[in-house]
Image 1 (cartoon, one colour):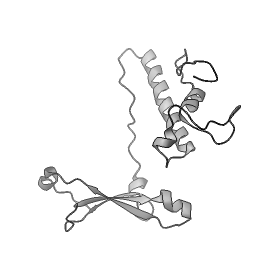
Image 2 (cartoon, rainbow, N blue to C red; image 1 turned 180 degrees about the vertical axis):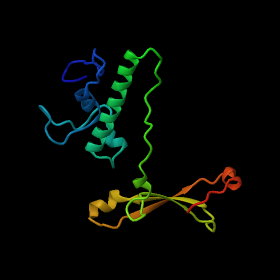
Image 3 (cartoon, rainbow, N blue to C red; image 1 turned 135 degrees about the vertical axis):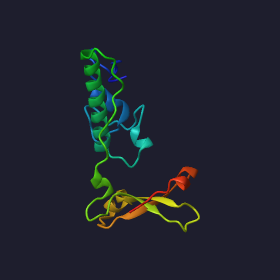
Image 4 (cartoon, one colour; image 1 turned 30 degrees about the vertical axis):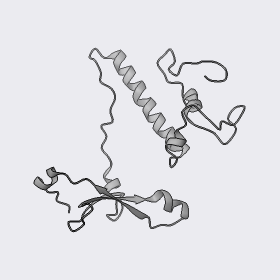
Length: 156
């Protein structure tokens, strides 16, 4: 339902109506068109409060691009096309970062009774707001299964 009229999310030419998608998923604090949208049917900010409006738009644009390119490939190809998937690997800078301090690290602690493997994430969401340059790390325990006992993980 958009401005009193029921409009399809996918147009007749196969393109996604981005304005309607915004209207259904993102609230606005500034005036957009005639009035402020304080509530929407599928509010993404309630489900993911730490993500910004720009991050939602980036994700939406990438998903729309993947869907539309997949549909175009289906129309032109004689073979049946599977659903689109991202084949691009996570960049190494995410793991290594500058000076060897990455965003994600796996830490092995054999003496710990809670968990032997820990995932260390750089917590830049909270420290960025405070203006700190050195970010704290979140330590999340990873499950240790019998597979890991047979095939030990070597961390350099």
